[in-house]
Image (cartoon, rainbow, N blue to C red):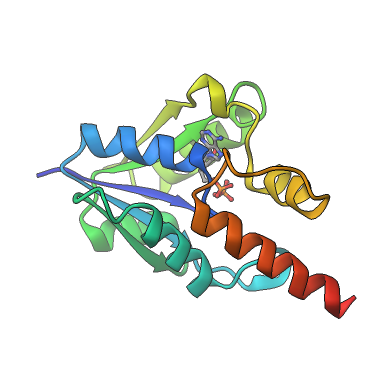
Length: 164
Ligand code: ADP
């Protein structure tokens, strides 16, 4: 049984992330979406909120589960007994960073493979940061994230706006 870990910040999870997760779940027996429990400083959502949105987005896929994690990705992968770390690649923008990170992870844990999956072309332009920017400026995000994420994002942005 091969377990794969798909780690990231998922602030929030988008259809781009879900495309990679769904396809990876077809390749591996079990896929764990690992939500990096980093301090909220540069993020819009708390770890609990990011995990909750990801969980709701994958309830219909029986071999995907979502868990928060602290510390090194390779340590969490070992804890899960995951043989593979999955990452998504968009053209140009992700390659250098993913390559560097994959080499470092390989050095830290040679027994774990890093597998990069190419984004589907319709999500090529989609990132959590551009999504938040569009939402903040009142653009339509309904075909970029699940409905629950879109509503949570709009709510969060209106709370943040009232604090400014
Ligand atoms: P991180 O901070 O670890 O990059 P992200 O949540 O931004 O966390 O992304 C997690 C993973 O999903 C990364 O491998 C990233 O390249 C990939 N990813 C993000 N958006 C997309 C997308 N639109 N299509 C495919 N992969 C994506």
